[in-house]
Amino acid sequence: MAEQRSVAVRFSHVSRHFGEVRAVDDVSLELYDGEFFSMLGPSGSGKTTCLRLIAGFEQPTAGQIELHGRSLVGVPPYERDVNTVFQDYALFPHMSVGENVGYGLMVKRVPKRERQERVHDMLELVRLPGLADRKPSQLSGGQRQRVALARALINHPNVLLLDEPLGALDLKLRQQMQIELKSIQQRVGITFVYVTHDQEEALTMSDRLAVFNQGKIEQLGTPAEVYERPQTEFVAGFVGVSNIVRAEAARKITGEPVSFSIRPEKIRLCPPETPTAPDLYSEEGMIRDVVYLGMYTRYLVELRDGGDLTVVEQNLQSTSMDALAAKGRQVKLMWKKEFNRPIGGAGSRSG
Ligand code: ADP
Ligand code: MG
Image (cartoon, rainbow, N blue to C red; front, side, top):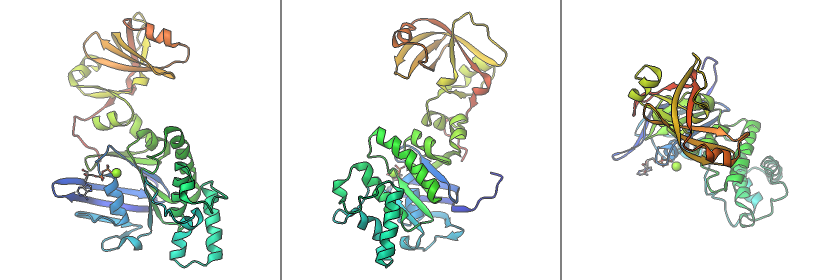
């Protein structure tokens, strides 16, 4: 990035090994002040361990972590200007909502009057005004998570760590909370480090994200960069859905034996006689399978030259009947050459 931004968290060649397990394996990255940064990856890829390293619950086996330019070596968790929000809320059940939110201020001996004001402001921020006197057990899952968020933000930490905070919520509520979390983050301007295994969540909320696989970063960039230019086969498959076309099959299409990925929604299904154009790749084939998914339909097309490609089309004009009737039909697949993304072989890394 060309612009100069101040760095909130810096990992320099950080590893955390547990015996043979390389939970975090030589990770280097910089998180900027005030950004919404996501760590995205499958279960076991090292995301939580990264958060625990920042929070100080875990020590690196190698490498260094800095918070605002200050080395964290030997700094205990309570002296780090960070807070964590977990998936399971971890609210104090015997305390009211207001007491939960104000807890951090009470520990710091902030006078009661000021405490009440700040609790009030925080509850407004997370849209729970008037619920200060309830007990956590009298709240819904979504409301509890807002309380946890308010409690974590009330001390104005420099960095807020969030470990799959929406994981326990149902899809509708999760999507609503994603938008709200993002808007809260923008209002408070605190650096958020958000851990998730849900690619849609990471793409929706992040300014930038890192894709983790086996303790390493496969790719780091903005959501658009990672989605539109996946640099490895792992990223192409994990973030969204991709067709992966390997060397020999790729050569038949492009003339070069370079593996590439192509997103299913970038390919158009056309009648076989459709003329092609110089800026397009075109492949003939037969629709072998059709899956109607309401908003869109997924087609599996067997190519005449071998292999198959998945194509996704929005159901703008077509009904489920139209879509399903396409099975067995001969088609020409066409897509802009520029949509091909060359990828390294399995195991290649870019981080
Ligand atoms: P994620 O949050 O991406 O699911 P974690 O960071 O929790 O992944 O774990 C990464 C790897 O490290 C996993 O293989 C996990 O089993 C291992 N691991 C994490 N913590 C410990 C520990 N305290 N002892 C041994 N292995 C651990
Ligand atoms: Mg985890």
